[in-house]
Length: 119
Image (tube, rainbow, N blue to C red; front, side, top):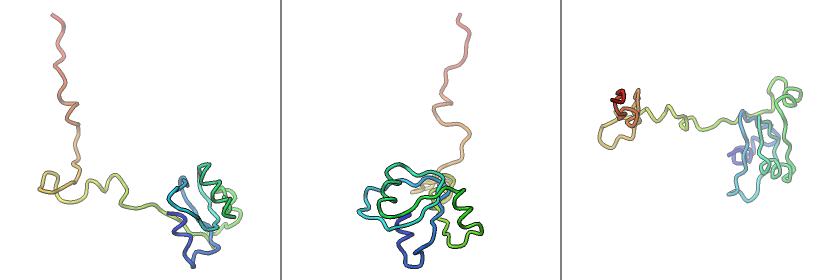
């Protein structure tokens, strides 16, 4: 995702800011040279970015290099990937509705045996 966003001609020379973890994607054969500032970068992703001639910054280094945020692009995840989005849509129980209902208890929690003293 990060490589696809930073490949665009308008993003050349900008610093990609990721508030999260940058992971490796084995499906990509080659990644562009890019500068990334992230909270965490996995070992494989770090190796590939550096091998492509890129650079990895911490947020402290980013604050020194671009204190106003100029020449940076904030990369965000999919908004519809949130768990709460599963509750939106046609009413749960309606035909062909995959909407998740808001429930207090799950089914298996209700089917407990009664708590009786051993007689």
